[in-house]
Image 1: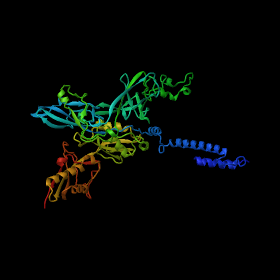
Image 2: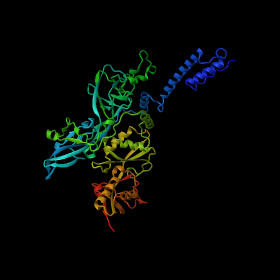
Image 3: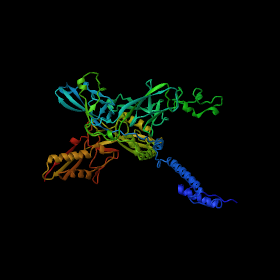
Amino acid sequence: MTQDKNISYLNKDFSTFKANLINYAKTYFPTAYNDFSDANPGAMFIEMASYVGDVMSFYLDNQVQENYLLYAKEKENLYAMSYVLGYRPKASYASSTIVDIFQLMPSTVINNAAVPDTNYGLIIPTNTTLTSVSTGTKFLTTEQVDFSDLTNATITFYNTSNFLVKKSIPVISAEIKSTTFSFSNPTKFSTVNITDSNILQILDVTDSNGNLYYEVPYLAQSTIYDRLANPTYNSDQVPYLLKLKRAPRRFVSRLLSDNSLQLEFGAGVSNKSDNNIIPTPDNIQLGLVPGISNLLDNYNQTSIFYTQEYGLAPSNTILTVRYLTGGGITSNVPANDLTNIDISAVYFKSGITDNTVKNSVVSTNPTPSSGGRSADEIEEIRNNALYAHSSQLRAVTKNDYIVRALSLPSDYGSISKVYVSQDLSVNPQFTTAPTAVSNPLALDMYILAYNSNKNLIAATTTLKQNLATYLNEYRMVTDAINIKDAFYINIGINFDITIVGGFNNQLVLQDCSNALKNYFNIDNWQINQPIILSEIMITLLQTKGVQSVVKLEIINKQDITGTTYSTLGYDISGATRNGNIYPSADPSIFEVRYPDTDIQGRVVTY
């Protein structure tokens, strides 16, 4: 009967390996080897074996560690795991701010009044370059500026023959660069690398024939968002219609650990269309193995790699890739620094030519730019990947749907307020069939939009359609979303205060009005948020110079025509409970529509 030889691998450092080997030799070879002094040549072999075990254990532990997102330290491994979990590491973050752009516009006379002549309105294209005076950092406009449309424009009388027109536009610290790649024979999942610093994103990819390649999160996604010009833009203020479009030419991009950007294209090397893959004698041949006639035994399921289902592989063409670089901590520039604007691409919408007006274009940034920073750190990648894995780009909770709705790109309309509730009751105001039954798997999404003056309005049908298309890509398959109109209740505030002796009555009253304007700023209010009267009292009492608040009154502002205020009348006194004014049971929001006139205060004395 032989004795079992139990070897412990729990302790794997050099000294433990050596001690275990010595104990092993003493136990199983007591007569063959019994001199364990450091001078004995046998000790050299024990130590060499211990060293090998120590090194192998280290690399084994390190390799196992690098397989876990929580413990991995190698940047390359973290990048790979991040993409698997749905997070895209960033090489740089762009700085952003709002830029005011001005132009002189000649005056014309309409109805005996001097007004700007919109025929001289310039178009400032998207991606117009502005340069920082102090650092030379390049910025790009993110939207087109149309001075022929005076909506949201600030107009100032400049001189007897000109008006000064101002419009504001978001800009980001970025610069457009381009590179080209040549392709010969089609290759499945071909890749190219862009080596540059601070790459922000791909702008577009075009082949020699003018075909666009679309970026997708993963090659199996065969559809992309496409935008079509909205013919009813002037009436519903939605510039584009959101549509889904099939994109056989597509690619994915991945940032590598050396901060280069890799583009990977599809596997389609066949010219056969696969928009609708139905097995036929024509397309099934793509997967047949020569010499086997039995279709069931012959069919190769990997034939999908020869179609365009993962995207069409570029072949016999030259791809031109335009991309954005920039950002970083140095891209945060101070205020009034973006005064150098490139007007080479600026043009008149009406087609006229006037270099004096064109050369009058100037720009500035009233506030500093912010948000610029360097690439993701190791811990940032780790935590962001964990978050991406938990969300999985799907709307699951009510808050997920709210965030998705508010994330609708502005080109497809602007959602200002969102409220989501489960469809547990039937409200006759929102249904055409009084016998309608609620759906336990449905959510009711109540939304509002802004008009050009940032006043609340009901969302248009076009905006709702765009939102439905956008949400459809993120909603759970079992969820149904009912998009409905929320209500807005217009209110006014009347207050009386007493003033501490020695303070100017008008200045204190103006400070109180400004404090209430900030309190009732529509950005601070959400659907179903009550008015807490004690907070308003505290806001007034904290204003310097106010001694006491004698009266505070909230009144309803209603217009049955809907031209100025909401058509909704509301019983403020009936909705007041314990010092709080509650909105209606139907999702609604309070709004001070015209703060300059709807907030009225008086200074009283006793």
